[in-house]
Image 1 (tube, rainbow, N blue to C red):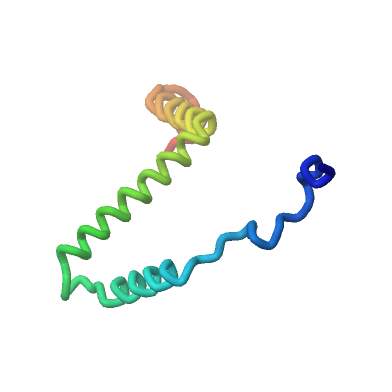
Image 2 (tube, rainbow, N blue to C red):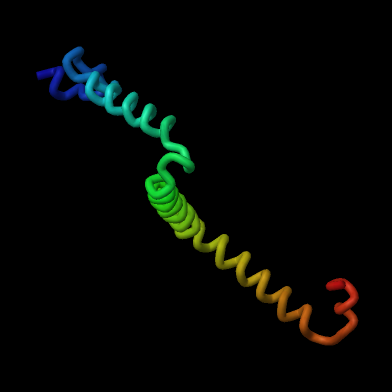
Length: 99
């Protein structure tokens, strides 16, 4: 009864907190690493281009997610740049600072 109430105790041995890769996962990672090491543009240009496009999509998605998380900062910087651009187009004594 006391163990059920005290959930902050360390987990039992049969319930590890950190997952380690299984032998099958390690084998899959090793095989994928070997395939990537053999992948060169002059041997498999189409597959290399395909992987490049897939990786580009992943990186663009990460960048979009980062921008979305920092929406206020992006909006403030965009407003600042737009304001400076408009001010640079206007005539006046401030014009000499934009040369």
